[in-house]
Length: 414
Length: 114
Image (cartoon, one colour):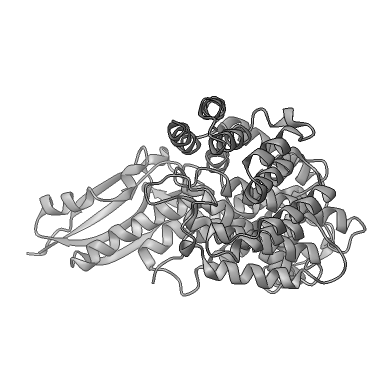
């Protein structure tokens, strides 16, 4: 029997979330120690005695025994989950209550509550994303730093600070709390950013980044599978992530180079993700709420239904970008809208639209702003200008894959 | 074929991410599986707890482990079959324990009767 990929990493989140319900969120570090210990046991025992029939259940059972030891040993020295109170103090109730919590039926609820707890309003978005990755997805600060092109020391500090806020929040977030709606939207935003981090990164350089997309999909599935969190916007977000994920196999060509939406070999798009995404998009049409996720998913659906780039209904896409701008205007969205206009009405019109973007100076450091200018100048056959733009873009490339991509574009402007 | 015991020793556990822990375990499983398929494993043996008791002297004084030097603690054993000590030693060199800073495998021939 083979062990499934990333089993430890995935079980880590489930175990920490469940143990935190027993120990209390203030004992987060203790829960993490117990989980670490369960992995050490598995590492020591499994090679000698063979894989257990159900590795996940074995890990959880090992964590449970260890947790019961800790509760017995430290119940006078520490306070544990306040809502369990006296149940943990008596030998009669200790084992049954721990059994019940770690038994499995409530594990998805625990994961969701942990996910909501990680998106604490006192944390900035990047800290929320790092915390979700660390606690729910089991990535170390070293692995997160590698995915985010950040230093390990800075990532470690950010996570430790975030954990302090989490551990100080007294109890896990309650899904029936008054601020549920606001917290749900923070959770959705964090998953959206998590996916983007994986999607727009240099996936061929680092396998971790594809894993970020997979984790975002796994967590968004938890949202749409739970009656309290399966809202219209959660469906829309899930649709968006699946539709974008469908393009992952085609984003990098055979030579390991970045391939744009226009050039991608669409036969390599993952049909299952497309189908799932379209189905979720239908489900998102409950109620009258229209969020940016609905609109972005609709844009992705238009692309997904065009079997060749030249079959794309650009007028519809421009219309959807107009709607998106009215929901949440930003220079990046405006840039994408301008690119869509260039597709439907020509490069000169696209350039006019880019020049008219409000707050265009915010895009100064964004390599694809300069690349878009370069591309459109190239189409207007003004090669010297196009080259200038691509040179600026190249200087702002954030990773080797973007560098290669922009260098190729620059070389094409002759 | 002669029999040998491998005694595994390593110091304090380094901290590992879940992914690293799984990969390290996978390397152990691959190594032991390979030896099993080649007919070298008589008994895969057992991992041992890192603490225990030590009984010493005529007075049978009982003291607690862990012991003086953590790197001297035997972490587990395996009973293997090999043509001779040289082969048993060569096979031991493939053990993933050497990826740990102070990992060692002691290779000891089982004393034969007669």
